[in-house]
Image 1 (tube, one colour):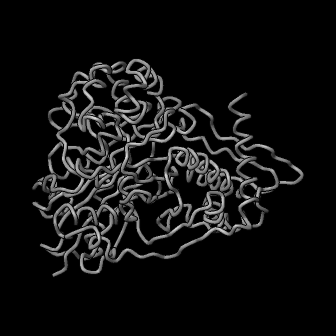
Image 2 (cartoon, one colour):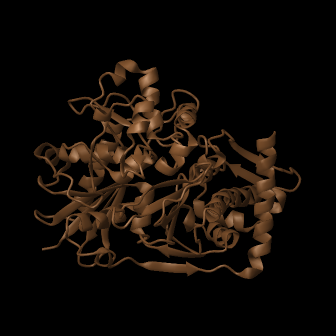
Image 3 (tube, helix red, strand yellow):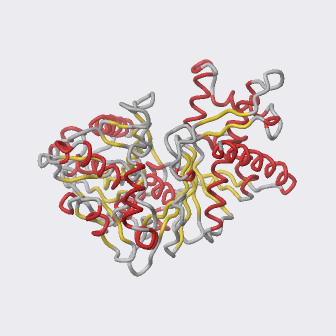
Length: 498
């Protein structure tokens, strides 16, 4: 009989499921729903909300599809892992009913609340204890609900992160993890527990916080009612949960100090592991608990995030013809322009406020357009160079913090499918890039195998992980791409100064 592991990856665009075969370490089948992107509601400018019940619907669709496609038989599925979009807020009542739409990661409404909390708590507390400003993270979003929707706040039984909600639907248990609480800026790194000082200052009830479990552990089992809804067997353990960026790093076996992972989906990230609680004094990059953290062997993840990444590329596709042009055709167009796009610059910050810009609403800008010289080729290349430049801006902040950035790992997906994007990334940052055949759902499945004790250690869990390609920079391109970056940064500074 086969032994299978199910990984679920809850994004803001789709929910994906992957079935992993334990013996081969290979994914048998994967599927994402919906076919088009999930809607993000924006009742006011800068707001971003999604219905958690919509996530559950698509999770059920994914589970049903992969089970049917792989012809899963009784007893084969051993454990379930969950990865999820970070920093969201889900509020439920005593009956586990959702009280309002989730305020998701790219929502900007709580920026001022976070800034106010940082001022009151003080940098001397926030930076060494929280390793971050409360910023626009989950704690600040919850405070917004308390201040603006007291009738909803009065009904709150527990608050959760998005992945905790999916786990609740499967198991009936309301739990969270240390890494989850740290991403919500609820975690005191010096005390290795909830920040009671932050809860008190923001007037957040400690009773609202779920019980904490380890990322790798049995965290409940599929209930009879969930089994009826999903087609899963009851009793299957949920044995792993993590936010999408720690999980993406885990899926690439980025677990040791100095190792880095990157993604370029809707948002773009670089996530580096360290064994010291490093922080940026301006909170432009953020430090969280990594999935393999323990008191005896601390492990932290430093996250650089650029909201305006793949979303710029998808916007560009829509305005250039939508279904009439493919991403491959766009990449070919971009390759037809010279390095630097003949002076055309794209600032990609158009998907909410950006942390690396200290939560300033910089917006997206196409600068230096010459109607007699530039065409679609230059616009496509400028967009991809602009996205990489934004990542490089954050990359250099991480270097200034003392992080060693030499080799970066990525899944062969999203914008890393573009040869132009890959070449720009390795040369602008002067790093080696390793591309793997994996994704977040596969990572969640491997994590479930560790949490359920099916894999004896991390090395066994990554049996079957396939390295597809390694790209190394050519020193001949260092100077041209440095000029591209410096020109981009100068145009950005001009915008900020204006």
